[in-house]
Image (tube, helix red, strand yellow):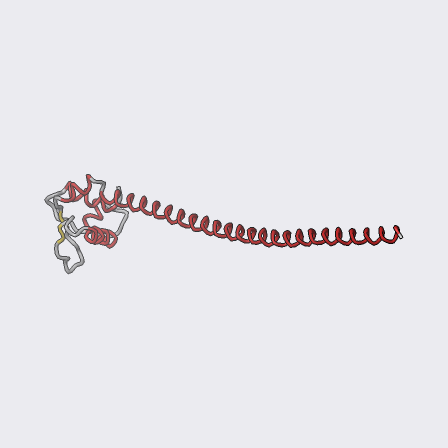
Length: 163
């Protein structure tokens, strides 16, 4: 049980009393000083102003508080310990979500780079295919020229041999 829940629990057990931070410090939280207890009271008030009844602060700096019926339900629902636990859980979820988002962005970046390399490879394939077709065309032309020249040489040689 945390310090704020201890204060609320004390107020619930002492419903008719109106303790100040000095009495709460002595009875409930002796490890803290009066100013720290007063700060805890202000934190309770800031969280839910009608959770405890607060009287005007004395000129001596003492802050009297009193039990309200809302404390029972608040503590039975887990009190400030549950709020703290829920905040930690929410923080873990948020942290995990941010980690997953970062991983997702990294994977998307890797995917984009992979697609970029695929496009580059496809462009290289197109370029090589085009070069291969040109070479193939030259090869075909060269064979036709070679065949035509061989035919002409054959005719000329036959003509000279037959004379």
